[in-house]
Structure formats: structure tokens, C-alpha cells
Image (cartoon, rainbow, N blue to C red):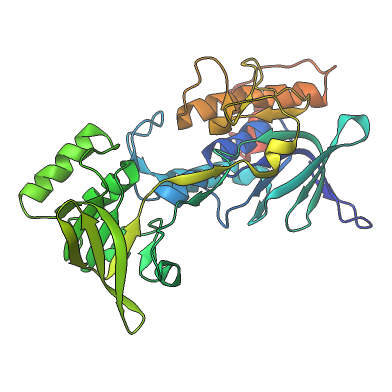
Length: 350
């Protein structure tokens, strides 16, 4: 479990999880089943990782036994699932340094100055910390958060307005299809005729354009018009010259800058900006450090939420063995194990 040293302020814990996305949250659950306490650190201000940052209201269909749920619903359910284990949650803090301490333990320090003395570390940081590729147009920075957006928190916020969406990938097309039925008008701008998004999404977008539900333009946003510090229009430069597009809100989906940050300096064996792991326990090249989810790589790796859950289950046993190498490991089931049911807080049957 975890405790705080009153003199030093260091939080002693069995495991630190770096990342509060789906894989990191489920890792806390798997550790909890094994009776292992943990602290979770994430650079974002809320749990959920890419799910919440990029597509909170987008439906997900490939979670076992859940025919459909939104990303937000998935994160809410994962948070509810780990509630019995009460892991520490440190949001808005990036892990800044990691040092090997005495007895193979790790001293972990965050950007906010929080310090942990941990027996093991699990990196579940997705693609690392990330920043959107921004629109390089004069005045754009002043509109961020008001009229210019790089992510959508709630689709309802854009209902009944004139929208311009820039981009040609899955995020741009997903939100185009979602918002076309809500907006007063919607224009989609992409720099070329071909799109990177899923073909089915592109086909549906073209259907909506053909029936007048949206407007599609080839070109790039090269200028913005304002009135009383509000966006009124954007200039789109394309093959036929400059087109003035009236809009109240501009949504830009140019992709993300991936940044591993300090993790890249921890001496871990890497391959193409991902951490190499074994597939028995998802350990890294440094004993006691494990990596799960999109940040790791191994032969046959598939970047799916489902894969992250599988990796978390095996990594939890890896953490247990690292912490207590002499302890015999037992595979128990939540349907029958009194110990697991007690940890989950399930009342004993009458």
C-alpha cells in the first residue's frame, strides 16, 4: 500500500503508474486484485488519456461484453471499477525524473514536486504527452479556447452555429459527421482531394456534401476575419483562388506532436519511439519498470484498448513477482476467491 513520510514528504508505494488512460486505470485494478497499492500520475488535468482528449463522445464497439459505449463512459466505468482500491491520482503532473534507489526501488519526481519511493514503475503513457499541431495563421493563437479548438469536449457546444473544420484524418471526419447534423452550416477544408480517414467515413461525408448538408473545399486556411474579438470568417486558399467562408467556430485537426518527454532519457531500450518489452510480463530492459498500452512495442503489437487490458493483467503479475520474488503466485478468480471478493468490497453471502 502507500504511505507518506511526514519528514520528507515522500510517498512510499508499491507501484507508480505513469498514465491515467484506459490501460493505466485497468492496471490499477489488476494490481488491486493482487493486493498491490499504487499511485497514478498523468500530465493531463483529467483521467482518460487520448480517449478523453480526442474523442470523448465517440462510440467504441470493441470492448468485451459492452456492445457500445462512448470513450467518456468507458473511463467513468474504469474509475468506478478501481474505486475499491483507492489508488492515489495525481493529475496535471508530468513525471520529471526517475532514479534507481536502494534495494532496487525507484525515486520518482513529478513536475509539481511530488515525490514517490516506489518498488516498481508501470509506464502506461499512451503515445507520451502530446500537443496538437496548431494552425499557423496570424491571430489564431488569440482565438484558442473561444473560437478556435483543437479538440471537442461536448458536441452540443457547437449546435446551431456556423462551423469550419480543417483536416483530413479520422478525427476531422468523425467530427464532421457528428456535427453536420447539429450545426447551422458546416464546411470541411482539407489541403488535398484525398483523405487519410477511414474510407467509410469519407464516403459518408461525400454523401452529405452531395445533399447539401455540408460544404467540402480543397485548400488551406490562410487567414481569419474578426469582429469584436470574435471569429466571423476564414479565408481558404485552394486551386481556384481564395474563398471566404463565414464561420463562428473553427475546429482544427492536423494531428498531434508526440513527445515522450523525460521517459526518453530513462535508459530504456527503445524502437521507433516505443519501449521494447517482453510478452511474458511486459517488463522493459530495466528490471522493475514495465510498459503497457500504446507506448510499448513487441512482435505482433496491435495498438488497441483491448490489447492494453491484456497487457495490464500480465504486467500486474510481473510487478508482483518483482516485489516479492520468493512468493508463490496463484491465479484466483473473482467468481470464487474470498480474498479477491474482500478486496473488491463484495459483501459475504448470507
